Length: 211
Image (cartoon, rainbow, N blue to C red; front, top):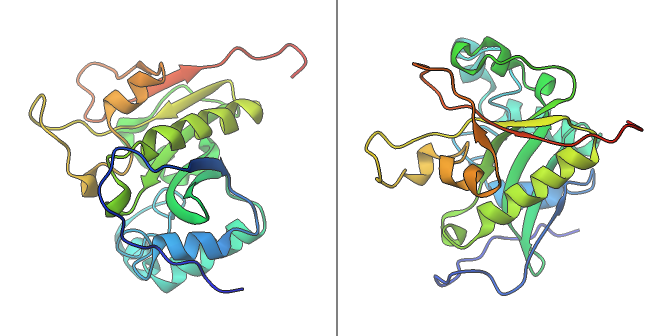
């Protein structure tokens, strides 16, 4: 099967045929096409939150090692997330899953919360430059909320970044965990402790008694 390629598109408010669906184990070719040679960002391959720490381990893992690790997780069905498509072309990715799947969250002091096995997290978005500011992030987050709810999550956390200056626009390279107004649009609440260095947002689901 040939690998689909990302093509440049003219700027427009929203792709004419944008669809979002959960990640499937057979989606590796779509992930590879979307992330490109750089693995979405500097060889990350959506592994930043999956490794227990940074430093030397992260530097050694960037690139090929991360790619192999993420490919194994995807193809064996161990990754949750959503892919956005314009027709058959992958144009965006959002990672969502049980908070326990992301060891680095446990080691990040500013992101400590009172969580349990039914706490899920939205950890990152990747949207290629030609497709940004076109509604893809909102569509992905809507899909991620549904994935978490359908899989029995009691609550869904997010860790957006806020511009240093109120009202300023956050550069896309630094907004990969999302920005506050995106989550506020989907009724996430700001639960950041006073004086905390990182924002924490949370959406609570009504859980069926049968679960």
